[in-house]
Image 1 (spheres, rainbow, N blue to C red):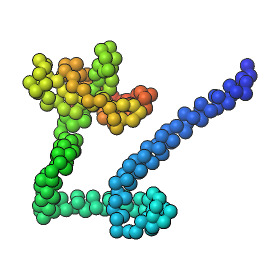
Image 2: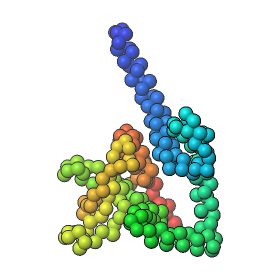
Image 3: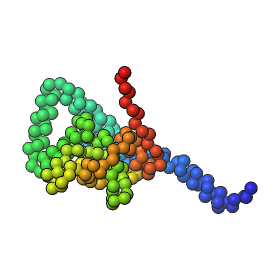
Length: 221
């Protein structure tokens, strides 16, 4: 048996350890990024406390991490309260009045209306709301990308096309939070036999995790 040199053994050990710890490192990095992104919004909820208490360097530095955690808990409680209010008559009336107020604020109403439409599209439980994994030729003919069908209601008269087209979101990898929106002829879209969760895992893992096919529906005899 040929004895490998010390640099070769070190390189093999390093690569083995690297791929073993990589999932944990990426997971911690994603959680840290999400916490930092959310806390940048929720920290506003600490307005009733003096900055020299919640911030480092006597109020001149960033928010201390445990106070950001407190702000996040407050945000969760407030969101839960809004959800509770939405389940009774007076709460629904209050939310309708608040929504009407938002829609009457100049400039703000444009952004609010657009975000509201997107939110309703993905939370309404519709069959075409980001629930089908597809494959399309992208970025050029002969190359394929995995994406998600987001809408099948694109009118060809609006986009001046002869065939019916559908909207497909193609996420980037390994970060699927950004990507490309492409309009593709319906007959050019290949629907894949996999769940959305498997599709996301396939994209995030750079294609290294093979998705499992969806189980066939049970037949009632």
